[in-house]
Length: 295
Image 1 (cartoon, rainbow, N blue to C red):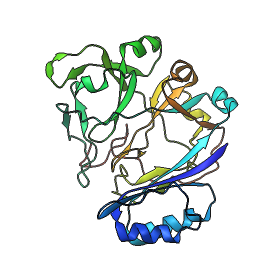
Image 2 (tube, helix red, strand yellow):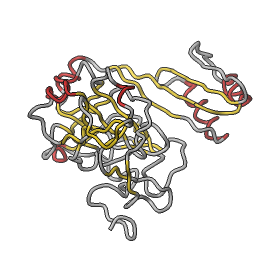
Image 3 (cartoon, rainbow, N blue to C red):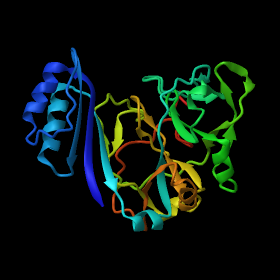
């Protein structure tokens, strides 16, 4: 398994971007330089490269927000033998205009935790040729699937189909697409799972400010009631400033959707060698009651 580190700055003062670039030893060709008074920078290096520490230290010292990822290249055997996998696909940059939400249960401090009520409303003409995609709603990812994909998912468990509406005609149910609403939440990941703070301002509710930069670990007993489609109970960075719940699916789902989605194997262990979680559960996790917030 080959690991590459990816770092992204989407907006920072031009002078700081240039100063940071001057400190990097390798000066890779894939750096994106700033335009105008603000700038972007993408850095891609092998895991363990000294530029990783240079980049992280400079950004944290100067208060520069950045996104960090670990890109892994798994072997065919790792993909084919994984019982469960994290599922991702492309995100459509679309505003779900007209979708209604409630802030009941949202964090009283940072405001994260709005929930969708009613059908998902969006301009469907912009996604007419897509088969499965994600859109970012107020505080989470939402999955959308075409009729063709619905046929592939017959017999799978852990989800239901939600109604879609077109922004141009929001009072009439739309055809051709459905919201894939994953209803089953998994228990906590193993404590050895390497969550780290990602540089965004973190609220005590832990719905924002965390990244998962390493492998995903579950104890075997935690998956005994898993369905074909599941969501992580933890939230971590996935677009926007708040963390999102991620889809964990069975190998059967991967076999049906491997041409349409990207999958990362989940590691299943018998006994967790760790002894302490990195953070408390997010307030909207099932069964998590916080006085005055989601009672």
